[in-house]
Amino acid sequence: MNKIIDKNSIRDEPDTIINAKKIFNISKDIDVPCYSQPDQYVPEIDPNYHFDEETTLAILAGFKFNRRVLIQGLHGTGKSTHIEQIAARLNWRCVRINLDSHISRIDLIGKDAIILKDGKQITTFNEGILPWAIQSSTALVFDEYDAGRPDVMFVIQRILEADGKLTLLDQSKVISPHKYFRLFGTANTVGLGDTTGLYHGTQQINQGQMDRWNVVTALNYLSEETESEIVNSKISNLNESFLNKENIYNMVKLANLTRSGFKNGDLSTVMSPRTVISWAENSIIFKDIPYAFKVSFLNKCDETERATLSEYFQRCFGELLPEDWLSAIIEKQIIEPNND
Ligand SMILES: Nc1ncnc2c1ncn2[C@@H]1O[C@H](COP(=O)(O)OP(=O)(O)O)[C@@H](O)[C@H]1O
Ligand SMILES: [Mg+2]
Picture 1 (tube, protein in one colour):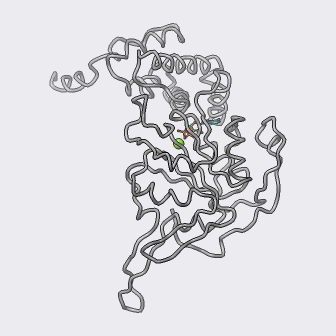
Picture 2 (cartoon, rainbow, N blue to C red):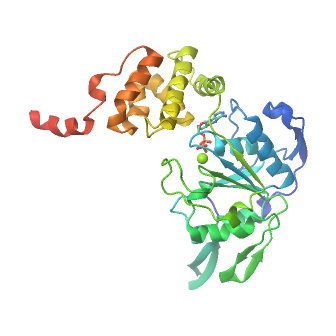
């Protein structure tokens, strides 16, 4: 990410209005302020994106009324891309920061750096992404909000308030947010810790922090019809006829079997919508649905659960998976080269 601040590139007020009902295909008739032109920080439009009504309304409230919106849901359900795709249609700048364990306070705020100027060494402060974003009409998205380190969460806490100013202690400087700065977050848990066993590295979020999010909305799995439509639209760009609608519907059905298997305790891995999309894409690449299933999902699953997955596969596609895919894959790879 280019952190050089070009003051001229800071855009001001939204200069037009769009009707959300038409643009996002939702039932509520609301007008939302937006920009007429994109710039380099506005995400690209995915023309086939399907907007979930409740999630879209929450995000639009964030843009229009400066609400702090947190979207919670299982992995790969479209949390981050919903925000990005709405920003893309509003021509609103949008920058995503993944708060996984590698991001530190210094990455966000900035740090002193030594540079050469006129042959002399001088120390200057290199602003991080946060001071830059907060002073411009940018929608900042904190992804994996529940995985942030304590030092990072401490920095974020202040700016969560609508008039939240950012204090740069080392600089003795206080930064006020731009009138059209917006803040969103996505998380797999609701801040109460991981109750599923799926999300290592997430933490409980202090109630003082959770309290500062004005709108918390959940985006879990979609209906089979909607999910199939999404997968269909993703592969329609590939201009391929290898998969038909029925194949895709069966893929989504299998994904749903893994989700209920997970709920009942039969499986420890769930197939996300993101994995269904890559299974469909891989099927086209390899021209082979079972093999694509193997490389997209089966190989990520515990060996003891693969027989169950083979049975799910049979229920949806009428055939079992080859026996030798189900066990001892790693051992075989080690033994085989010695057989020469
Ligand atoms: N409603 C949707 N319409 C179109 N594509 C979607 C939709 N929801 C998810 N996707 C696709 O699924 C993948 C995962 O979405 P993402 O937003 O990264 O999930 P999350 O942030 O919830 O983990 C992306 O490739 C995205 O384009
Ligand atoms: Mg995400």
